[in-house]
Length: 305
Image 1 (cartoon, one colour):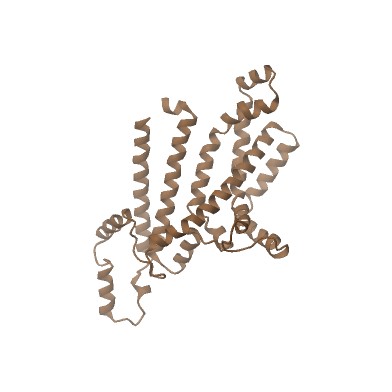
Image 2 (cartoon, rainbow, N blue to C red):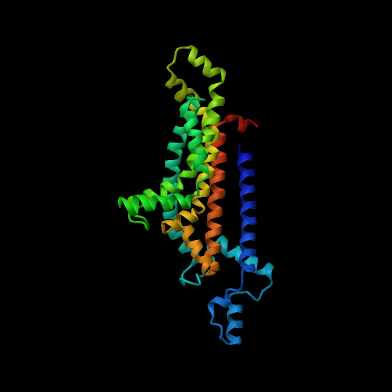
């Protein structure tokens, strides 16, 4: 087990290093930040001085080493637009993104597992057909389109819920419903297929032969083993949501990391873009690590392997 943990940690470090290389290269290829920081008629001497202060006159490998050394310390530079440390700006938006992601995931897990178990227990009957049909339709619906429909119906027409910003729990409902659609589809489908495999196992037949009621067989014996593959999917979904629900945050004007990153891209605010991308990637890698460790706890066969 310690060897497995160490190997996965080393792999995570290598992945983050590769991501830092990509972020650095993409930022350098997208243009010169000096052009944004100075007016077009700025004197040449002023431009050259700013280039030296930012270290852009050094060779690219040297620039990357400096970028990596500062990034490890949480220093991504000062935002061109806000004139504040970029890393601090991103961290200020993390709680809003985490709140939206966790609410969406909780909604997706509860509804998705319920629909998946219902479809498996009622295999090839109308509940199963209805769940498969609904998830097929839901999989084809873009989240931004669903968000716009929710805004028009519940916000504009009925006036029940706020449609933008962060103004309490009521503001969380519509974006969480919109963002939770994709987890519902994937979790319900995986839960259904996993439960169908588990319900055919011998120990489930034995539990039924002992006279246990069907609910006890399904929820006490089958569901625990049937949820093992879902653990991995839930972790991946959480990592994806935490790394930036960009479109949903834009539609609902949610003050999260995704919206901050999009605004920074439009303004070519390189320090904020780099900080947001690296923070989001770190969250995703960390979640994947936790999922792997949780899976070894749920399934001892992995530890033995």
